[in-house]
Image (cartoon, one colour):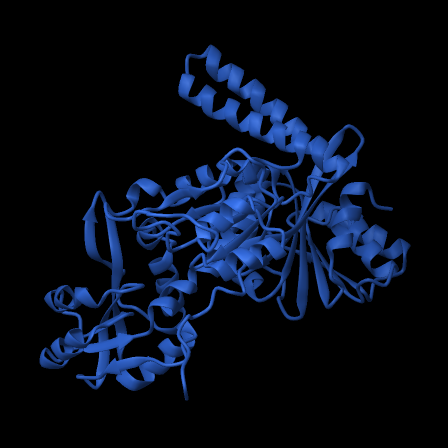
Length: 484
């Protein structure tokens, strides 16, 4: 009953509850789901009456009138969300699919989306990731002379920027022959676009499209890319040029042109981290704190740098450039706070660095919060064993936060009329100053105010490098132990 395209859609349906087929046409997909026993009940919707007439004929033919409900609806507007676990939107343009999802907020409630765009697939992928959805699985299917892609998506709430490579190839398995053919075709199409740009005199556009076509073609051929491309992608997302002058972020250890097979994320690179990476087959570690910071006077067998080189493990370190980025360390703190508290107005930059860059954010709560209760929420957000604080005010209203070690920013926090500073590594004299100036101060720990960015970085890498496995180091843990 189904062609390869719709078979792939049916395979992605969970069967846990009610499935809804948007733009059902002849209702072949709903009939298949019911007749195979995968779903006990299916909603079939369409924007026009005529396709629903064809759908009714199919339903009558198979005598499944009590198991398929027909609904005349523009997208999902008239579709009841109760008990719907899967929504299939197939055979439409990417822009139309985006509009349908935009107008159905209930899709964020753990509903599986099965999407099969006929056009604008890169734009659809970028929109999904930018709006908190992720593609958990994607499959290329051949039907006649065409190759289609089917995506299985879920809302995760983490907004991720998808760059051009991943927006074109999606989350396809590069080891699959049909997927590689799909990727090859995209590479050839980009080559033609690049030639057109060259002929029109757009040299910059030609260079960009030509490079992208080459990368995609190389990926289809070799099924992997060099480590330098991971660095270049991170540089586009979190520009290393934005790091502070005293910092040492960048590609610090290893051969840039070796292929990368598996990445490990860690807040710091220790000997334990290197041992774990070697045991797990990781040939690249991306850390927040630089593995080389002060000038090295020697490199011996106990040196972390020596062990990285010995095991052919590259190290990319993103320190202040990650702290400054909108979706970096402080951006993740902002996102987590915004899920627990309502803010009045937009967050303000804290320490302004010029060129539109800033470190930390100032937020005003819509309603005052009790200081100790507020601290308990911070403990949950950061996953701290303990929080040190002084509550000179019994309320929290205008807060400022800066990841890592931001105690030195207390005077600036007071100058900007903040009643609460959230940071880590607070020194004794800063506590005394907070007490003397009647400001709340929360020390949530250097480690805990930064380590939470690793989960977001994993989502970024998973989205942009679906062909590279990324793991968070088990050894990325608080180096300080506590006696309770």
